[in-house]
Length: 302
Image 1 (tube, rainbow, N blue to C red):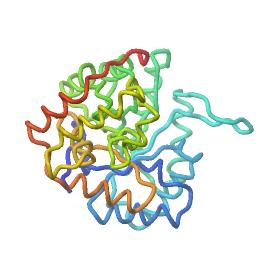
Image 2: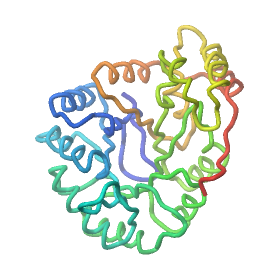
Image 3: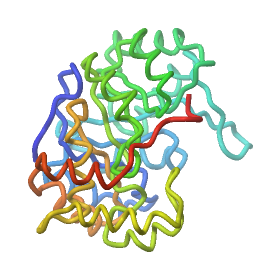
Image 4: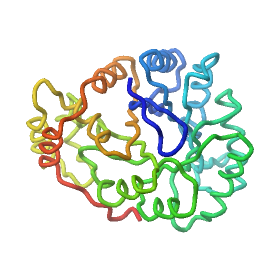
């Protein structure tokens, strides 16, 4: 599988990363998915301390026993659970980041994290304090690099200006083209890599897309999505399939280092692998797909 440099870091990551949120809580199901991904050339795993209250990190730690050196491991921080209360609260403080990383390291059974990401963020955060925490962890060798996971252009802009982030994870697909005008050019200019999550738009850009389209997606209403789905299918020139086009579309942007796709079964993983192993989109295909799907714009997320 092709590997790309993540921004200006030394991390060479597979162009398809495994988003681990969908793995579930059973080792007997999740670990074979991880192992097959590694055997097929995927070397980038993305998780979070938030997923299944840390259970996701524990499963990855078990799966990587004896194989840690094969993997570029990414996790996230910022959503703090309070004992005795449901849900979580947002906490980007330096104290919380420095304490939370220790718990992630324990669950992941490792002594370093390749990419530590802030799992959200707003302009009201103590951004300088948050950056101080990541920089301290980097100096101490606990993390190799850090980034943010955000769809807020104004927040992304602040971290580009004030921090040493090497990556931004952001939702980006044929049905969510919001990053194209405000985010991708900025990150390309500054040598910051993009990790494109949600490339299949919640399954709408798969073979079962017509059924899933009934729920709507972002500013695409349930009434208009079937027609949009049909136009995208027309934009895929045989033998190209829509999942192939969907996974390759974000990779056509120079700033994008990898698409991050989840899998809850080995069958789903194999489908994603087969799609990514198809040839890149041609300029003609890109033109047809862009003509079929309108450009979205960020409104509320600032």
